[in-house]
Image (cartoon, rainbow, N blue to C red; front, side, top):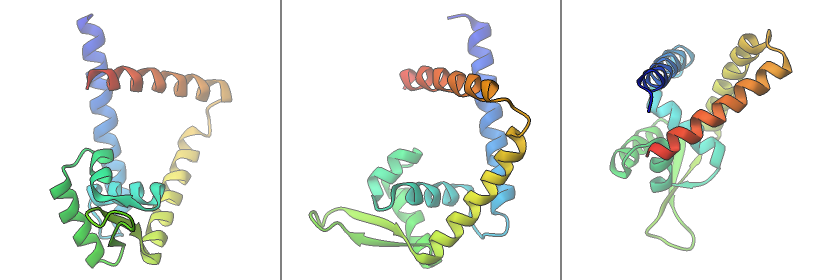
Amino acid sequence: MDTTFSQKLFDFYRTVYVNMEKLYSQIIKDEDLSVIQLRLLLTVHANGEIPVGQLGQKIGMNSGNCSSMCKKMEQKGLLTRHRHREDERIVCLTLTPEGMVVAERILARLKDLQDYVCGGLSEEEMNHIMHSMDIVTNYVNRLV
């Protein structure tokens, strides 16, 4: 593989990661959440009910750490943990009404920011960017 391509891909990933962490930190500064708690909250929001193990896989966190973080979020009143109806060994998560309000508020802020940033792009440019993101995502998924 061309080292220029590899370096460019690494730089792109690092730039996206660092800037998304900064963005998330700014958006949640008033919510009393860490960035990892934000990722947990939004993933539960997107999935409705989700087992702790599956949540950990989706955000790249081991199930023990994920479970510990979920307990803290439960204490904050953002989500509930309960046993799966069919298999009581599985602990599932859902958002509380308060968790839903917080998630919706954060998602609205993210959408407003996205609308602002993407407002100057044509539909063709957005489609080109989305296509490029798909290519990079598929490439990175093959690496792991």
